[in-house]
Length: 235
Length: 143
Image (cartoon, rainbow over all chains, first blue to last red; front, side, top):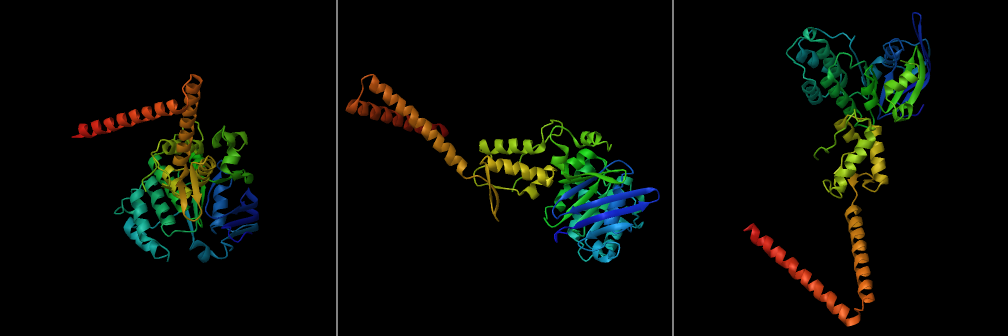
């Protein structure tokens, strides 16, 4: 493993009932946005959960910042921001919730949190449980980003967002990698958004990696990512 | 630094890096971005345009290869300083070629030596006077 790699996956196997995810080798260097694409059931969430230390592996290894995230959840997650719509949040007023969460992270940046709350137009007086689905997504994004994690892992962040929410998401993702030490992993069905901001892609289908590499090289100039995925038989 | 006036269109079918190259080259060639103007780094420009780092990096590499921008190590990316000098040099070369061919033609027609020199000097004086009158006229017009 290159010492600067943020993620290093080798010979990974994760079983989930009848489903089996296999990733022979995959590395993520600093300063880049990596898109994880593939149809439902491809294994995107399983992979991202294994990287975030939320799921044990059956074989092979996952290293994040050089550590096994399942065995070292505190060290890894203090610098890894994970976001998924399925993540539960306490039903507090947003302002109280953010104040509480800020205490979990020594690196929490209050000014950034306020900027993100304003950008994502979240009403901080509402209770988290009373937020719409899109507002809930935006709140979870703020919580995953405001402590300036080295690695930001977003699992289908665009699913509940409208067009303006998606643009703010893309802007926020690209602002993370203004710092060349930080990277973002993002899975999404909104392929033209992924194609737009991802430097590299990992294309999964039925638990297997079918392509990995630079977005422009994989997709090419005369087709879109959507067309490329259809051509690869991974739609 | 002001945001660069670049508008990307997803519907155009033109790759984003190409649109960035074309629009930045246009801003530079038209003088809207002056030589030595500092440009945002590719990491700064990406969130403004909502495109990947690699897209902006590729556009900058193309513009640098075309001599329109220069990446000065450790200082950032700038509009190339030699653009003005280069286009001025080209204009001077064109002007010199025009004068040379006019002189050659005048000699063919029998105007040479001191007479030719006197003619050219008179023409230049008349041009200078005309220029001075125009300047004066402009100054008066402003009053």
